[in-house]
Amino acid sequence: MAIIMHVDMDSFFAAVEQRDNPELRGKPVIVGGHRDSKRGVVSTCSYEARKYGVHSAMPIAQAVKLCPHGIFIPGNHKKYAAVSRQIRSVFYEFSPVVEIVSIDEAFLDMTGCEHLYESLEDLGRAIKRRIFETVSLTASVGIGPNKFVAKLASDYRKPDGLVVVRPQEVWDWLAQFPVKKVWGIGQKTAEVLASWQVYTIADLRRCSRETLVRQFGKQGYTLYQLARGIDHSPVEPEAETKSLGRETTFAEDIAAMSKLRQVLADLTAEVGYRLRRHGLWARTITLKLRYDDFTTITRSSSLPEPVNNDDDIFHTAYKLLVDNIGQRPVRLLGVYVSQLTGFGQPSLFSDPRRERLTRLMDELNTRHGRPVLYKGRQLPSDATDR
Ligand SMILES: [Mg+2]
Figure (tube, rainbow, N blue to C red):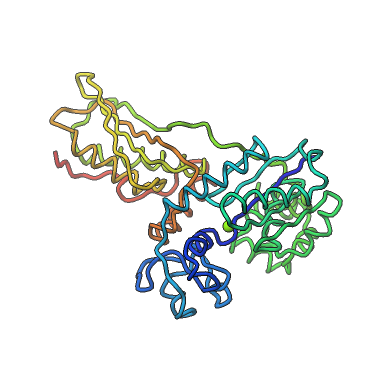
């Protein structure tokens, strides 16, 4: 039987700020932007701020209204990433099979290691203790027979929680949760289920597999299984990927900048999509150009923060293209990304609307197995500006 542990740091960014600045302790700390920030969103907030109804992904302006005396901090991504690396080294003391989910969250496959500990509770206490010794921060830990249960368990007694769910307890324990806690159930699915009077996992079990599949397709089958605590998804260790990219050779050499720009938009959309699918961010963007005489050049640009949004990749690559195009027609155009990392916090530094749009596009493109939504720059233009 598998033993999976999910570790989730408690209000990570805010906790780091409170750790490093004793004046902030016990106060409502809101990380994500200055209080007059027009576009900022709450990235993390301390538990003191949550009492006022502040939560992550909320616009800063709204958080100011709910919690006017809150302490608003733009955030220091470099520092959080450094702390995250320290925590990651603790994970590897416990298991070689670690899936980094985000900057403050990971799954550890502990299968076969349980005999090293008196009990699973002991294992959970041990990792919480090591994390606290290393970074002076608390984590919540969930242990269960699979990732789905472990993740629900770590969330169950936050902050500083430890919840162990044994295989024989899974059925009864899961029954209480609202369906929204099930992976893959978003607003729309929840609405359909609510129209069937299905609100909890216990309710969800009353739906037959056929009904769920008829309504939700392949996802319906997953819901059927998760409602029963069945989840075979493996803990996937960090990607070995060092770089990824896409290039295309033209049937005829291209000189028109408008056409090259459009192809570049397609290439970057695909590279961005693949990055996000792998949960990766990239710090270096590389443009590859082969001219009509077969001379090939690559030009790179490294960014201050890792990115995985199409816009960031495109604008960086496009600048490289403009700077290096010269006067010759192009035979091959490629975009590569490297210096990959599993860390990045999109909501901290970028526009939340853009992040939502990207997620929506990714979802649709994944569901259709091919790109069905495009950005304007990917569409052909009649202009021949060069
Ligand atoms: Mg967390």
